[in-house]
Length: 183
View 1 (cartoon, one colour):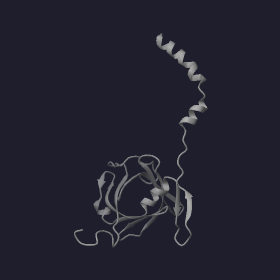
View 2: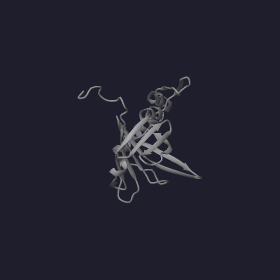
View 3: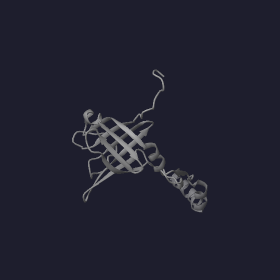
């Protein structure tokens, strides 16, 4: 009974408080972040940035696949010959001895883990694979679901699930690395 008395005593205070006053005290506008985009051969453009813009900047370039697992089974035979080259919204899957596959990709980085997807159009068909990504320095981890199925939500594959896990390292370009041996 005493709890009910406390509630009845507090209720008028809660009802009297102006909700707009509470919101004004707790609401803060997100800082605006502007990004300069420099398209090749054209003048730089300043745009209002999003979390996706810096994430795409970090992905740009060529990545070597250092580990690949499909449906719970490691596939070093495929990983050894595979690279991914990211540009703005475009991803090239490069496998030695095979034609390069070009897909459009998208990112959503406002949550953990980040969401990733790629889309391939062939003939009148659209093939999509959706999954998750995590980047830490020069290591990128992707896990994608089978084609046209629900998004993979974790960095895990199991026998029969059709998911593919990629671990990539940023490719070293000629001239990268130490200038003298042993340095």
